[in-house]
Length: 198
Ligand SMILES: C[S@@+](CC[C@H](N)C(=O)[O-])C[C@H]1O[C@@H](n2cnc3c(N)ncnc32)[C@H](O)[C@@H]1O
Image (cartoon, rainbow, N blue to C red; front, side, top):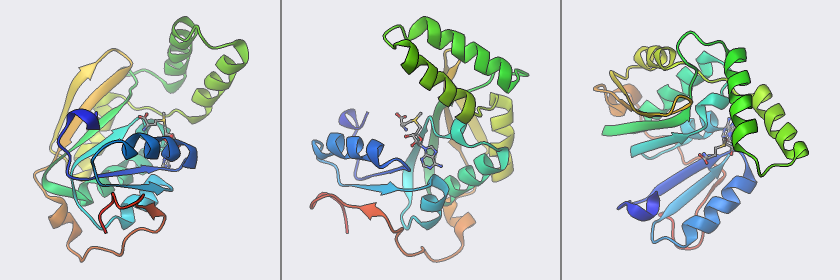
């Protein structure tokens, strides 16, 4: 995605050092200053000193196991969002009124039909992970959470029945919400080589 866009700088967060090592390798080939932070998303967001025009949360919200955590994460996104910025959430969603269990059965049967390159052991590992770690919401629940935080526009731009791309905007700016001096830079941030800004 970054290859096709004009991006002034990029910041990535994940609690997996392995995932960030891959991101580091991919980003190193682009002419974009970047920083990667290893750690819990909420902890890192709370300490980010900068503001962002676009925040992309790709398949991260469904890993938050309570609505309160999702609300806190959306609040932190708003806090670091620039006044005209948008948050883009790409993730799996429940159907309206679908239970988590029904969703997991649906996800599992989709995966068994689609991921034919996986052997039995790999499939079991994947399915166990999803049953243990996936806590998606329906679009209307997600909209409710976003509204409580202060987002006033939530638009679902793409939907294949399981995955959605949702854009969130707020008329209240992060600056209003912040109302305090930027905190010190988060620890754990890496700025590989000379590519990252100080
Ligand atoms: C389904 S993967 C998505 C990876 C990537 N964002 C993408 O879209 O390809 C979920 C990622 O979320 C990370 N993750 C899960 N919980 C997290 C948390 N609390 N803080 C930071 N990262 C988290 C995992 O390490 C994993 O890399």
